[in-house]
Length: 103
Length: 158
Image (cartoon, rainbow over all chains, first blue to last red):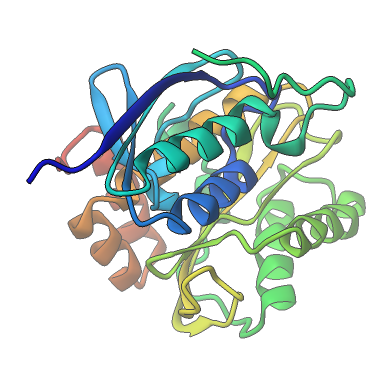
């Protein structure tokens, strides 16, 4: 009955934060997974496959978020999405993306 | 952040004439020039910058809404305008639908958090079906202003 779940704390590391382009990248990647993807910020939860929802996060540099997924590929979804966020969405210009950072 | 903090009310366009992507961006930036918050000499550069940003991926985020934007060194604070197209404009939006509602934002380079707060404000209210529908149906500038003021006063609640 119960579906596989996965969760992980992530931090927004790129200087510009979770603006429109990162939100688009996140949505596209999240949509490749079957699992439902949610992001928790404080006590609000949003749908990780909706760009409109993602932009409501207003998550700037340094913001801590919780990534959650529910479904067969939940762990793969969380791993891939955490990597995307923690590599700074390809926007890190210091040449050392913090892709290895983990919870 | 509230709409009144960044939307330049005299620049609001209730009835956009443009019917393609480039023209609609031009018309929106021009409205900010007409309102006196962008210098006429900067218009072309800002339009080009907004178009370059669109080439990275459309800011047509679905629901008939687009948030074209750019950072530009000539603005001292975040400014924006609202435009409505009854006909809708093909904006290569993410869901393929025509865009009826535009929020154009121009921000200084050194204020990424203001830009995020503006996007947050816009999208938070657009998630509200009533606000989104009323705004798309608005046909006069005072109607749009009133809707933005009501949203600022939290008269729409989800």
